Length: 65
Length: 239
Image (tube, rainbow over all chains, first blue to last red; front, top):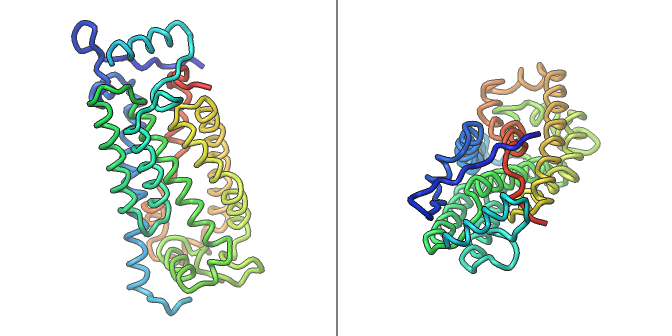
């Protein structure tokens, strides 16, 4: 399968800008979608358990064990 | 710094292999510290309960990495860091969640409260006849079989693959692809199992299918990863 080459974004002669913003501009659309969803889902994964556990404990308490 | 990046890029264009950022001995102390924070963050986030604390660790790791970049160090692509982080947290959470149900923790008050609560809210498989099967935990045998495969085989492999991917190792990239396809297989079997026991599971949960997806959409990792993994520039990864 062919690869999509990620293009370096040049910032003036002889300079290569490798900041996140420049990397983002150089990404093909499919990779932009991946990175965007990934960033959101990292936050979702980190937060869902913490909201679930207090809710479960407060709602049903420890008696069900 | 610029010359170093350009030399690396030129070497890659010529088909050569170079020790790039994040791998080998060229990595700076700052980047090593960043990776340690990132690993700690993923482990903490993988515990479910301490997720936001893990998120703080991960933000610290990203700040350190950005600082290294501002100092002029060549770092790995940010997309690689994000994706490896996502896969490590996902693998850790699945290992933890299903591990709780598979092993003896399902008999503890904390374990059964958490899992029964999850079952009551989202998936009745963790509520109906819970702990009445010979192995304990969920009484749905299809789910239990997938737990054994996931906890003892796939998810540890997935976390290690993500770490290798983060370190820009060729085997890390290869095993990310391999474990993503394995994960696809597991999810297809999982959805088939869910469908066959639909009424018993979603008929008995408060939020039903909508709630299930609101909670579980974050675990659709391979469907997000595979297009990226198959189209990225794999020559960035070293032996």
